[in-house]
Image (cartoon, rainbow, N blue to C red):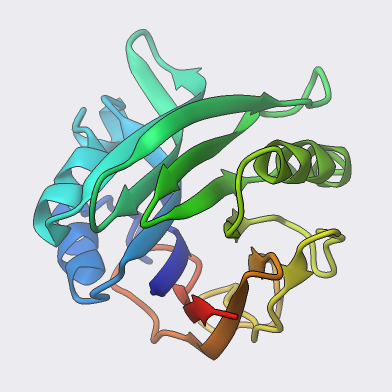
Length: 215
């Protein structure tokens, strides 16, 4: 199972322009079985009022679910997306606790490819640490095997009883030095290969790839 997590920064190029078609083309080249995207816009003015998750999923030929964390503008939404090569079932959008003055965050919980999956983007300035155990517990309440992935905004996250996959830095995209994008597995799964993909035409993160197999 080819698993990728990618904070897409709403498809923003280094020059500041948003290029959703470039994001879609890039994601289609990953050939992922599971693709978790963070910082995804839905009907937001800055990204052309398009449904980014749907555009990327169409380019990849994947099923998808969007998890809104907050509103942007009158009709826009902003959050995470989970794309899977196959059906997605038992979907839950889990709102995570956050400080009153910080951005709301959420996790997508779902079942796909015979696996319980949690895809998320955790907060900053201290919010990530209390958010992570809430998401881990929600995933562990679901059947094994279990897969957690996303931008956790933590360099050394505690994901017990899951096991963190050792991965290289994927942020910032120009010269990665921080390991805040992560994948974690339960005892039924193992990582067989790990890599950070090359810098893409959009985003301030690089995609993180982990090949996963049964333990």
